[in-house]
Length: 153
Image (tube, rainbow, N blue to C red):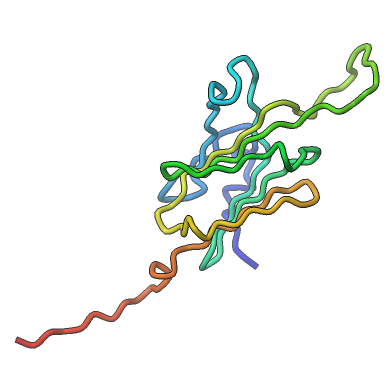
């Protein structure tokens, strides 16, 4: 089982703040580029886990109630972005809310990827309310030790 950075389980690392130290040499951050999506709408940030093994990084985003066709995953200039919309499909005529904790509307999570990610090998799936991405590390960077030939002369 992969080791998860203990910093992620601390109270300081919740979905309500910027988890900027998950990739130690890079950065995971929340883009909040609402202007790209729609200027007047607030963007929410779903709970996200990022972890790694020796050969792959993994991203798991909780998106219960989001229709697959409403999800867009893009890569540009070292940033992998997950964007979309969760619509409120409740058909009951609401007089007033007694409790409202579920976020609707536009969402996004953006990750600045480490240099060792094999961009062409990224795979994304969506099932049971979770969007999961596997980001394989480049094979030539997986080797810890490289033998160097010694030239005579």
